[in-house]
Image (cartoon, rainbow, N blue to C red; front, side, top):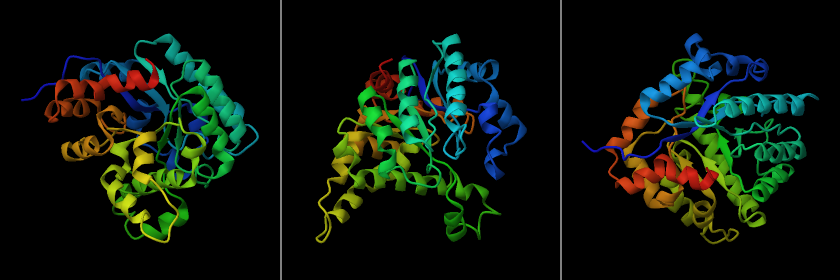
Amino acid sequence: MLERPKCPVIAIEEHYWDKELSSKFVSGEGVRAPDMLKALYDLGELRLREMDEAGIDMQILSHGAPSAQKLSGADAVELTRRVNDRLHAVVAANPKRFAAFAALPTSDPKAAADELERTTRLGFKGAMIHGLANGAFLDDKRFWPIFERAQSMDVPVYLHPAVPLSTVMDAYYKEYVKDFPMVIRAAWGFTVETATQAIRLVLSGVFEAYPRLKIVLGHLGETLPFLLWRIDHALARPGGKAMRFREVFCEHFYITTSGNFSNPALLCCVMEVGIERILFAVDWPFVPNKPAVDWMNSVALCDEDKAKILSGNAKRLFRM
């Protein structure tokens, strides 16, 4: 049996919930089984025990979906700031085991950019945005101050899924969601929304405006590495604006293994985007730690490449 190399293991898409923020979630987004809620609210004993049992040295913590992306009231900015301050205190109390991505109040893009700068100066490793921001895709130029600030602070923005818009769910999934509730989430809906978000960013020209901007996608790139050749080839057909889609994607995007522990899918990603842009993640507590770590034993990569995925690339990207 292949073995995991002896190196640190840094998992970079590991979620929690802040009780004040999660109290604002509505409908099914705020509903979780009791055991899942216990894990999401735990930032100590349970989380550390499961990390230790799996051999994970550090988690980069991020608030779970929809985080601050549906806040719209006058208190959105200050509430998000309080959430980040509480997370900062958790990291400061145990910096060898935890780092953090900031939540951002995207209902006020200028304030979100300021919060990204503030939290970066506190030591956060970037920010995570969940799905659409109050129903709008992030390629809308009103959100570009966030990307401008991310470039200036040299930190990435992690694009994480959230449930699709209600109109999308009705049009695409309503016949099946009762029997297969995960079809709107990890089984397919998350992928469609997040991949679309990423494609729109490339088409928008944001990377021409901010050529050092870095974006992270989970779940082995939300299917996009598999589709890069076809997207690039189709966009190059006569009649459209010139676009270097594949090149831009591979220059600006990093992808993680969160919740997608497939050898063929990983090897596709290695071949398309390169080993230097793949980072280890679990998606805890929605996915257990141990299968993710054990999976690396079976991957047909050399120890040097496995070590890059498990922690080397994260150390470089996040300056850890």
